[in-house]
Length: 254
Image (cartoon, rainbow, N blue to C red; front, side):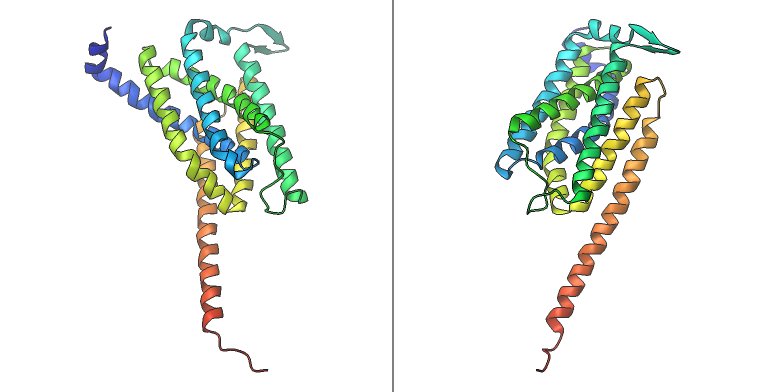
C-alpha cells in the first residue's frame, strides 16, 4: 500500500486513532515513573533527565518496531518451569515488574523513615547517569508492553510508528506538569509510588500468564488520583481559611 493510499484509507485512520489513544493510556505509568525519578535530581538537571527519558522511550519503541519480525518471536516459549512456559517477553516483564516493586518499596521506605533531605524531596542521586539508567530500564519494559499492543491493533508499521510518536509527544507535554504537581504536593508522591507497586505486581502476574485486565488497574489508579485531588483541594481551602482567619483576628491585648 502506497503512502497516499494509507492517508486516504478510513480503516487506517481508525486504527491510528485507536492505537494512539491506547499508547497514550499505556504511557501514563511511564510518565509517573519518570516524574518520580527526576525529583531525585538537582532542579537544573530535571528537565534534561525528562527529555532523555522520553527520548529513550521513543527510541526503544521505534527500534523494536524495526525488528518487528524478531520481536513477534519473543512470545515463543524458551523454557518451562512446572506448568509455566516462559518466553523472552515473560522474562522482560518479570524483571521489570520486580524492578518496580523493589524501587517503589525502597522509595516508600525512605519516605516513611524520614531519610529525605532538608527540602523534603528525597536524597539526590549521585549523578544523572544513575537516574537515566533506571529510566531506561523501565522504558524498555514499558516498550515491550506498548509494542505488543501495537502489533495486535494495527497492520501497517507506518501506522504503529506514527501512533508511538504521537503518544511520546503527549507524554513529553504531560511529564512537566505531572512532575511539578508531585513536587508541590508531597503526598501525591506516595500515591505515585503506590501506583508503581500496582503496575509492578501486574507485570509479574503477566509474566506468569495471569493477566490482570488493565481496565481494572487504570480504574483503581483514576479513583485513587481523584480522591487525592479532592484532598488537595480541601487542603488548599483549609489553608486559605486559616490565612483569612489570621488576617481578620483582632490583635491580642498584652
